Image (cartoon, rainbow over all chains, first blue to last red; front, side, top):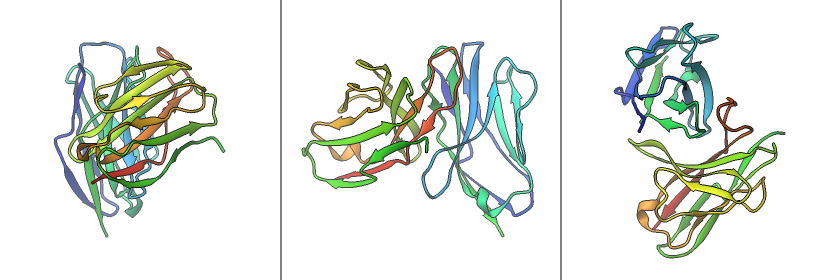
Length: 114
Length: 115
C-alpha cells in the first residue's frame, strides 16, 4: 500500500519570504500523480499543484513550485513571496495511475507572520 | 455553477441515531468518493463509486454504508453512529476513470459530532 509522509506538522514563515514544505511517499508503482492541496480555515480543499511522475520537469504554478525527486520519492512544495492568504493546512497526496483514490499525508499547518 | 454539495454542513447527534449525509454533483461525473479527515491522520477514503450501482470499500469503511442509485447522488449512511465517527467528512467527484487524469472536485465538508 502506498503511504505519504509529511514530517513537519507546523511551519511558519515571514510574509514575503520563501518556505518549503516536505513530503515523502512510498510506492512500488512507476506511474502515478502527486498533488499538493491547500485547506484554509474555510475547510475547502483546494488543489494547488500537480505533478505527473513520468514528467521530469518540476511543476510550477505562479508562486508555487515543486521539487520532485522520483528516485528519492520526495515531493516538496516551495512557496515564494509568501502572502497572508497562504496561511492554511497543506496536504500532500498521491494517486496511482490505475485508481482514483487519493492517499493523503497528515498535513502541515503553515502560519504566515506579518 | 459546477459544484459538489453536501448536506448538512454541521451535525451534532447522539450515539445510535441513524443519519445520512447527502452528496450531490451537477457535473455528470462518474466517480464519487467519501473521505474523513481527522487531526494527525489526514484524509482517508471511506467508500467510492465508479458508476451507478457500483460501490466499493476504501480504507476505513467500518460503520458506514453508501448507495449510488443515481449518477449525481452518493449519500453516506451511518446506521448506528458512535463517538469515534466524529470527524470532518468530504465528498469528492471526478469526471473520468483511470488511467485518464482529471481533477477531483471536493465538496465543502460536513462537520459531524457524535455524543
